[in-house]
Image 1 (tube, rainbow, N blue to C red):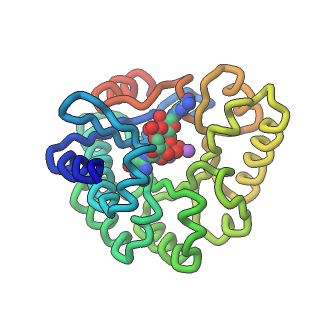
Image 2 (cartoon, rainbow, N blue to C red):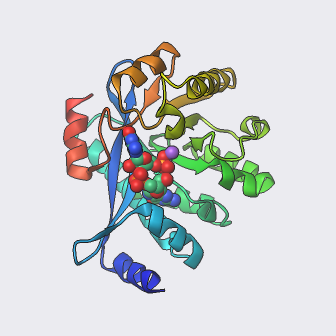
Length: 254
Ligand code: G
Ligand code: G
Ligand code: MN
Ligand code: NA
């Protein structure tokens, strides 16, 4: 309850911000996108990680104003970089299942795009396996409506949820993001190596692009390139950065 009150106040007082992690074309090494990640730094300087405050926000409903703020801010920022002359990149925003479940989610995305002037093709929404499966019939329609707006859709943390593959064909997805738990032990761990190879091959057969999360070493990068995984993110390239630092990184890697 104390956390809820603090969160409410924090939203009003601008204590939340976004950091941006570069999404990289593994073959050229250039930045092709940014993943927006919420950060909460309180007035006393202490910070609370999203793993802690997102579940609380989902329980008390604050995920709606917070998620809406994050989506609007990420779109505004991407448009601002374009207007400042930086190369055009995609902005990926994490969407909670609670947000997707609201019947006004699609019009909300549409109005944020209009308001910020960001081209729909420059926005990607990251959805998780479990949030898609919760309400799958409605979600198939909702995802088609999002595609009709022109935004792209990715499935986040792939491999950690239900792992039911049949829905992959039913949802109009563009990108599959391999969860970093599989990448950690690649290429030495045989189990994760086999799983990662299989996910990449399957995604390609289904016409999906693949992005590997949590790349930390040159060996992991080499393995992924060998298996034709074209996109990635992780500390090997950069950790999530405040907007100003991200812009500098973008300027140097494009
Ligand atoms: O940045 P970090 O690794 O600490 O993020 C931890 C988790 O918080 C990740 O799973 C990420 O998806 C989630 N997260 C970060 N920002 C957002 C956001 O804006 N919306 C939602 N729904 N989840 C987020
Ligand atoms: O769950 P999701 O994929 O949205 O969360 C992304 C999270 O992964 C962010 O919190 C980010 O800080 C974290 N992250 C990004 N790159 C790396 C990495 O190379 N190693 C580790 N351990 N975490 C990472
Ligand atoms: Mn994500
Ligand atoms: Na992930």
